[in-house]
Image (cartoon, rainbow, N blue to C red):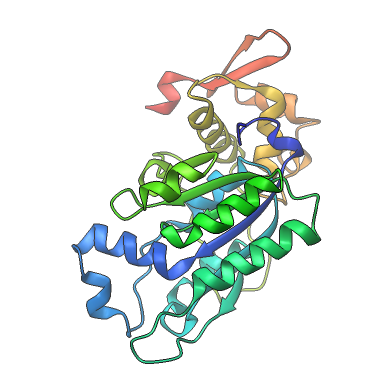
Length: 272
């Protein structure tokens, strides 16, 4: 089973063990034990949430997006999580040195959701604990595709091998896919339209990374762009349709005739 086939028809449920992935990334940056020393302080944002969400968008349409943690320490992630429509599940630890139980709550919710929402085709769990092994069996028994994401140094190898697909966090940080920063959190007005070249470039980079091929089917690009920016509309850029928009930027995107559809890639000079 391949999580990257027919992503246009796939519906994704995404679950973050947020403290787990944050601690792993922080320890990777600042050395083992860095998170333990600062656990009960307001945390510096170190997770590239946008990069993870771009990867998730390449799998299909996101129906559930929940992150579990003790949010009193992760308030500095507020804007990027709101921007990506992440539902925050608050879990207070029962004691000063106790775990917050995010993995247990996450597993219970995922098990319930695959029963309640049969249209969900793909489950993504962000976290590297072996505690996810039992829920992996439940998800696969229900006929769902299971994708895991975790840091290479801290992910349990048995958990990684229990997934249909597993991606290390580090591999998702693709150069050139970083979007512009979020707007001022005090501003509620709609931002200016995104640069269409940047959106299309990010979509092609992410899709090509999944396929291992720089050439991407034209039919796959627009759905990916819409998942990156739901407000995307060709008419905003004086284009009659998506093909017209691509044609307007032929200096950036190269086209060739594929077996069933046109294929596009970023021109070498544009990618440089």
